[in-house]
Amino acid sequence: MKAMDTIKVLVASVISVVVMVGVARFSYTPMIPEMVEALGLSKSVVGMLATVNYAGYLTGALLITRISSLDLKVKLYQLGLVVAVVSTVLMGYTTDVWLWFVLRFVSGLSTSAGMLLGAGLLMSWLIKNNQKAELGVFFSGIGLGIVLTAVVAQLIKDAFTWDQQWVVYGLVALVLLVPAWRWMPDYRACTLPRTGGKDAPEERSRFIRILQLAYFCAGVGYVVTATFLVAIAESMPALSGHGWLIWLIAGLAATPACWLWDVFSRRWGQWLALYLAYTLNAVSILMLILNTSMASVMLSAVIYGASFIGIVSMMLAMVGRVFPENPSRPMSRLTFSYGTAQMLAPAVVGYLADVEGNYTNGLWLTLVVMALGVVVLHLARKAEQRAQGAPALGSG
Image 1 (cartoon, rainbow, N blue to C red):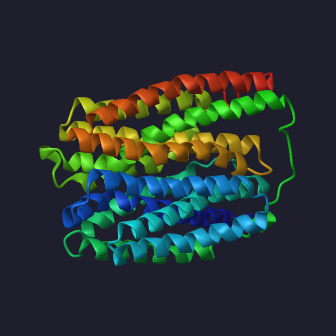
Image 2: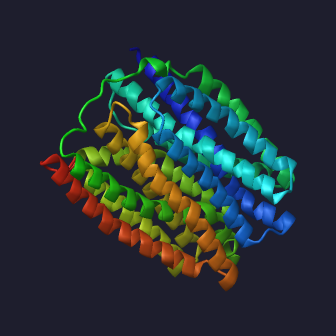
């Protein structure tokens, strides 16, 4: 395997994440103030649009747990790239809220293909070709997607109306789709033999269930900030007009963080890395509550970007290594919990913001859930130790 071939595969995977997660999902975040100003959308509608997007993501995760055919996975992954472009462009061609709900739901399906099928297929390819079974580079596409949407938002906000901006995002995704498609390897040749998973099945199942609950908590911590960070910043007098910059900072922090978390977990252990990532995510939320200065919000964005991406990358890579014969399935089980949080939390926080006129209580609720997540994560580690009958995976 030539080094250039490996680089092309990794670049194609990262670009696919930028298209199916960055554009298909994150373009909505900087679009919120634009749509609210132009159309007078309520915070509840804003939250519900995020909710249906994650409902699509959750539905996709559920479907993927039922798929074992590698050929079908590859076809759906490729379809996800196309759907990401189309569903984004069409957002600019209607003002019907129910059609928006449909488009955001379909966009969520695309995101699940990019995140779960993409991660699983790449994991299989890495193992098959004797590469390091780590997904830090893959998930850097999420940070790059945030950076891209933030930069594009700033470049087009004055020159284009809100509907034209959606079309611009879709055209950007279309351009990126070309190298992602051309450099995609033949994932159908990456079938791996079934291994492990037979010892202590009850304990192993308990471990996965507890890990799902911990990941649910992480989903709440992730999605509330991802959905409302720009809106929160724009609602502060000192930050009015700087929401895009806050979003850009979060993306810049997330982009290299995946690789840094891989390095940290190799040196200090994956569980310690996860404890730290959860704690930092909670700190980023607390900072939004306690201090609304520009410096504090910017620092919160940095910590948030670096921590949420580490949680996603390390969690999914961990279960992918445990079940290498079909990594997409356990990844999807975890994402079912993450997606449930993503579906519920924006609606709840949006409702609280409508009732109270600010995001404070919604952020406090999010902080409590993240603190609970640290406790549940520790229980998952104990369950994993019992299932393995040995020191926990990644404990040293």
